[in-house]
Length: 99
Image (cartoon, rainbow, N blue to C red; front, side, top):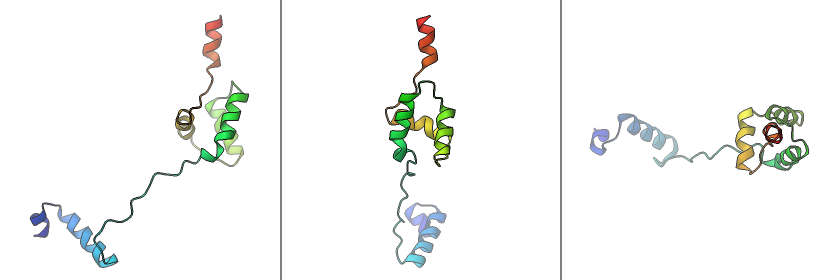
């Protein structure tokens, strides 16, 4: 009846009712934010390693971070590098162009 009156799903009315009984308010709960970026505190280390070793690979950087107690996925590093304005040097491509 209420759901039809307001044009919403019955499940929404049930959830609002449950929330009101549990908290005294039907207001929505706090929205969760984005996940904390785990590599931000290690940006200086990552930038230094990329500058020091032009042959460093994604896998190599992942291994170095793991040794420092920062286990992360390849994807985490892959997304972090360009977002922070860093990049892997493409030494292989540069060698091809010189030849």
